Figure 1 (cartoon, one colour):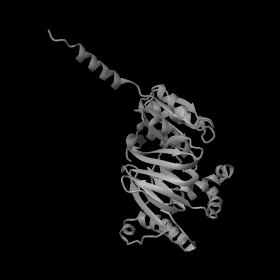
Figure 2 (cartoon, helix red, strand yellow):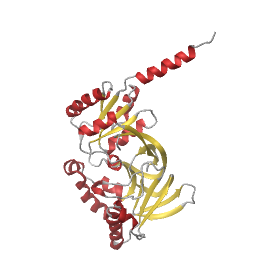
Figure 3 (tube, one colour):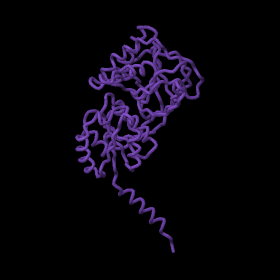
Length: 338
């Protein structure tokens, strides 16, 4: 007599998995969202898509998102919708990337840089939530970074957009948070000018992938997974969120002429020409004060501890950094027609 127990159990398990009602969680920054408005739309969309009752978890100053997402994962959710800015999204990714759950974005902050680079809707609550419940999964790369701080402590993080040393991090450190809440990215303008007056330069020994260790003096070093910033600024024109590579920018201006070259390169060539088919065919000149390289791993040792930022959040100082790419390391929900 043939034993059909294993076959029956397997079939039953598959049917149970297929018929199980999916559940989402909403992780939200209470300062940046209208929770009542969100709940009203979620209730409509989850029912229409056949999902179960959505769970809600609030972030706080003490927990910018990691703890809330871990609670959601422990509750068995299939998708975490993040309602907040770049910092909340980065914190959520830190907790979700080693799980089977997907991450959906409800842009609610100043930059929303990952959403911009994925060409998602930025200011349409209904469309964003509809896309979360009816969309499809897309795998994107994730940056993993170990930071050795000035006090010799070691912290490990992830980032989705960019990690920056130099002007980038100093600008964020100089930004008035209250002003940022009122006028958005314009609050960075004054901080940029303040950072530009800082004459200190980065002195770095670095190794890219398996190449030999080199030394460089730079004003700014940015390791990017995405290329676009606010105000349509294309900082890293060849960056792709799913190519398995970092795009690394090294700025080495020595005078006002170099800054003019950099501005022209980034604002005109990258920001305007590179966005059109005709512009991409036009010849462009390399700029001595601006260098682009690509890689999968980057190790840097600095002559002294310097400010560092991840996805727009200051992370203190760093005297050594190791960055590596996790290809297809995060599953993100995007619209079906994306």
